[in-house]
Length: 441
Ligand code: AMO
Image (cartoon, rainbow, N blue to C red):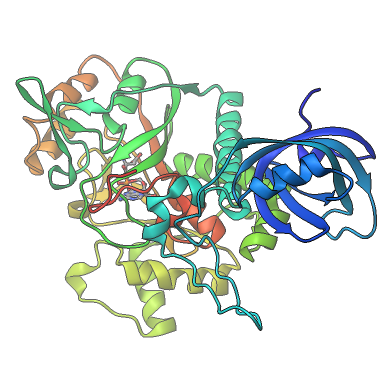
């Protein structure tokens, strides 16, 4: 007999269902199990007297054990959970679970029992595979999978080629201080902080349009709810742009397409399980220069910072910008442009000294940096020298010596995007979080 996914049980009849025991009530004459698979949950109702063998199997079960249930699906108004139950003829115990070491959710007090507190996120990460069994947690990854799938489709339909660049590299691309050094035989290598150099190499190789989704490493000792030392980046790069506005346009179209798709597929579930509305944005997204943003934040919220810090976006300004864009543009996204050259990467093209790039802020958190790149060898080399990097990035500079189209692109943090979509922190949203104090499981 073939296995049936719980979601696909639509009528009375024989079924074989497999999954974890989500709930177990073994009474005197009746036993009720709730079995959960990746598609849903279903009640299994056992009249013990009628089915002594099944009753015997139930007596050995514990919550989170894995079972195969063979029986009849019966639709009835008496069952709350989906209006259907399985009357089993056989229960096969695949694996018995020990008592769980974590509490995945808070259990409110009853007359007989005290309330149970939810384990902390760090305790839950220690047993992440158990933590991940819940519907809410599995939704994170269904949503994330839908997200990258939609973005991949959007790009391949527009002639982007997916590439895979090395993560073991010989030089830091973003900043020397945030790079992990690893032993590489008799010398040192670094873990890639971005596919930056190689996505640009693809432009020099004449690929014209590429994207990559892969691991990004940052040796940042940040203990915030949006930083991790290893995250998933969604990066793209394309040639023959006329300015970084082309890059912003590509990004807003990509995100709108993706959010529409996620909303259609999972909008209801996100609302039900996370209480958040997914809003498909309108295009074009609002744009402000950094100076305009600071001036508006001062007007609206009395927020000021010293003049010399205004070349970069502070975390507080990022946060406040959400209130501002909601109010001013009825939007959740904001492109911020015109950062100070000293705060931006050497590879950003500059016009009159102003980096031709942007940050994209969603719901008050930066999700992307993007830019037109400097593709002219001499200027690029001078900009690298100015940041004291010319020697380290010599191999990269060579990419621009033998012909290279004008190009630009951006890098999007997949984990950040997911966390903002669901309104939870980065530790909650990652399959396995990595931070300064976390390398296991
Ligand atoms: P940047 O350094 O801004 O740009 O990184 C791009 C995006 O990656 C995410 N991100 C992070 N997510 C979680 N934890 C971190 N520690 C972390 N650091 C960054 C953010 C961020 O916006 N090469 C450029 C991109 C480009 O210009 O194409 C770059 O890496 O969402």
